[in-house]
Amino acid sequence: MAENKFFDKTILNGRSANIRGISLIETMVAIFLLAVMSLAVAQGSIAAQYFDKRMEITNIRRNLAISKTEQLAGVHIAFLDSSYNSNETNITLPGHSIKFSRVTTVVVNADQSRTITVTVNCDSARVCNQPLTYTTRFAKWE
Image (tube, rainbow, N blue to C red; front, top):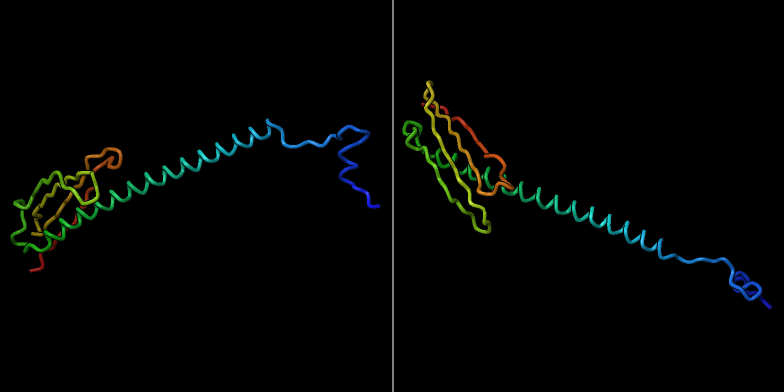
């Protein structure tokens, strides 16, 4: 007859052998380590979403500055002067609750070129910690 090796190891003279399972302390330590790792992953996910939002707002601000510069590029350079300086507030975009402001200055240089500076900021200090400034120069070709 075949011998049952499992039976021989677990029961010896009517008493159980020293075979252990997972103790409560080991289980608690494993759960604690899993919780700590889960919190680290969650924190990393939150930081990534925050960074993504900041980059999205930075791209919107950059696009607002470039669109104003492109709008001024359509004006003949002879007419482009400080009368085109502007201060726009409460600029909103669909799908965003953040309001933007845009300040545009036009400077006529000694060589008759124009320096355009557009500064864009937003009302949320959390995602806009400093204004975005875009500067370009239009040369007189005529």
